[in-house]
Image 1 (tube, rainbow, N blue to C red):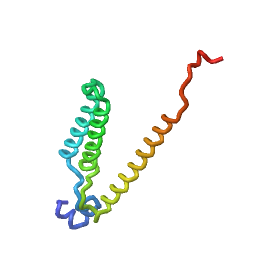
Image 2 (image 1 turned 60 degrees about the vertical axis):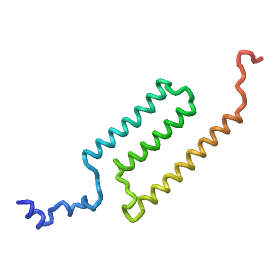
Image 3 (image 1 turned 120 degrees about the vertical axis):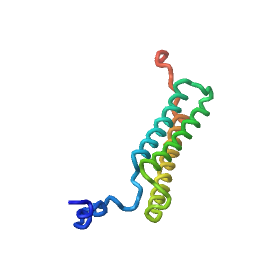
Image 4 (image 1 turned 90 degrees about the vertical axis):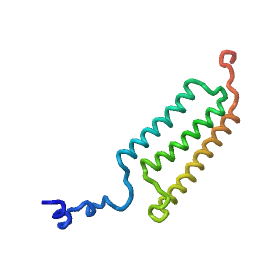
Length: 129
């Protein structure tokens, strides 16, 4: 059967539910996303392992900045998130996820900080009676 005959008998690509009008990515976009992900991982790894920046706070800030950029790269190139898809539901899910992540991270950091500050000092066990 020819391609036209398949389409006429309901065997076309549109009938399988895969062509819903959204961009599912191409090999080129996946390779660009992969390359950017590798670069955005390798640079912070190099910064931490070589100690190029002596100030640890600056190193942490730079690593976090690269992590945020990598999240955006993953959302665009692998999750195919756009601001105009599905009447805003994708953006609402993203905003909800960001809120939950911020709450979880800030709560975890707050708890770890206060545990560290409020822990009893470790005594030298060799001098114990």
